[in-house]
Image (tube, rainbow over all chains, first blue to last red; front, side):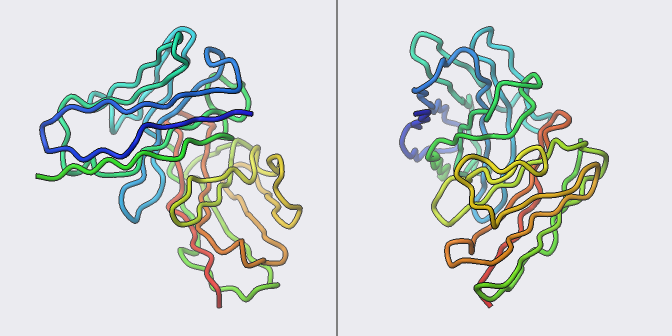
Length: 123
Length: 107
C-alpha cells in the first residue's frame, strides 16, 4: 500500500528557516515523481514543484522559484520542502503527493497524498 | 501558464439530484485533466484523470468528459458524502495548475 506520511505541524516566526518532510512507503521511491502543493487558509490548491528522486530532477512553479527548495533523500525514502526565511504569507497547509502513474515526465494526476503539514508563521 | 477557471463557485443541490461542474482551460490541455474531491480537514482525493477515467474505488456516479479547453464533472445522483469542494487540474503543461474549486453544498 502506497503511503505518504508528513511531518507534524510547525509554528515559526518570520525570518526563521524550516524543513518539512514526506516519508514514502509501499513502492519504489526513486522511480515516481513527488510534488509539493500549498493550500493557503480557506483557499484552493497550488502546485509548488516536483522532484524525481532518482536523479533529483526538480521543477518549480515560476511564482515560487527561489522561495523554496525541494529535495529528496533516496536512502530514507523521504522528500523535503524547505524555506530559508519564512514570511507570514507562507502560512498554509502543505501537501506532498505522488503521481498516479509514472508517465509523461512528471506531468500526471496525483493519486496519492500525504495528510498535510500545517505551517503557521507569526510574530 | 494555463489558467483553469471553474464554475460555478458554489452549487446548491438536493440529495439524489444531478450535479454538473464545469472547468475551462485558457489554452488546450488536451485530455490531461484531473478532478479531485476535498472534504474539510482532509487531503484531496483523486476522482478522475485523463478527463474521463475514474480512479480506483471511485463510484460510477462520478463521470468526467471533455477535451481541449472545456471539461465537465457530473455526479449523477448526489449522496450525502459527496458534499465537498471539487477541483480540476491540468497536467498538459508546466506549471501544473488547478482551478479555484466548486463547492457543492446541500440545498
